[in-house]
Image 1: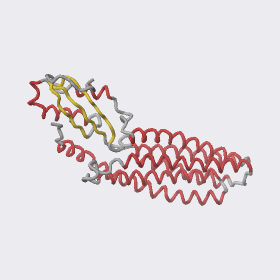
Image 2: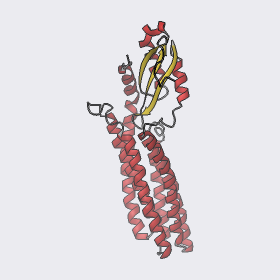
Image 3: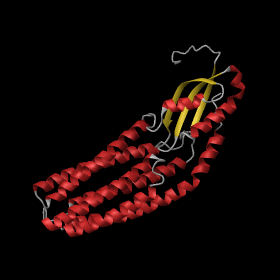
Image 4: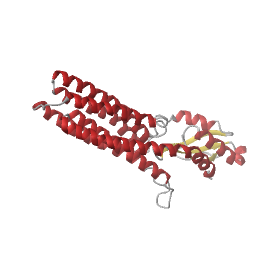
Length: 309
């Protein structure tokens, strides 16, 4: 009896997202190409100008490319259909990808901080002018890439990650421009190391959130934006639904959520279970839950389970 008429849910779902994925796909590809080219330019400039903050920014931009590539891969995998070994397909990969992305960033930060400390001990001469110009181009590239994802940033954890990365990167590049100008006029080379460490802290703050969010989904926690009370209230609106037990809400991927619940139903509403299910499934789709499974319990059954609430 665990209502699984998924035809409605699926038809509805794919129909909604088809055009979106197409422009998203292009956004990813443009973003990856733009940023890859810039990483090379910035890294070369960093070596030439001896600027650690340019190299750090290049590293940060490289992690953007990685996060875009990973998010794109995860998207492709969400569309691979389920099979007998993986009944949900490979949607979960998007969550694992989010987690790996956060880990990669932590490692990058370690390197940056180490190098900055070494630079404090023996500062190097830096050509601030070139540094400022290169970082200036960086602002444009990051802002443009962030703009590509602004529409979809709330639909998926990975896109949000990529978007935040880009937005933060634009700000970081701005910081590098300022420090380049200061170094050009004052020859205070240690400013470069300070900026690198500031960038490192910025990366850490963003990454911590990403790590927590992805771990929560990894552990089948309730996704942060879901409110269980609200969901339960919505289910109670179903015709003839007296109570809801055993409600589980979890993430299938960074984009899709699932729910299972036992519904206590008035005996006279039992014949209507299909339409109740249909109605509730529809309500839940508006709350961003795309896969729901309901099991009926009848109000005249005595609750004998230990775990009946």
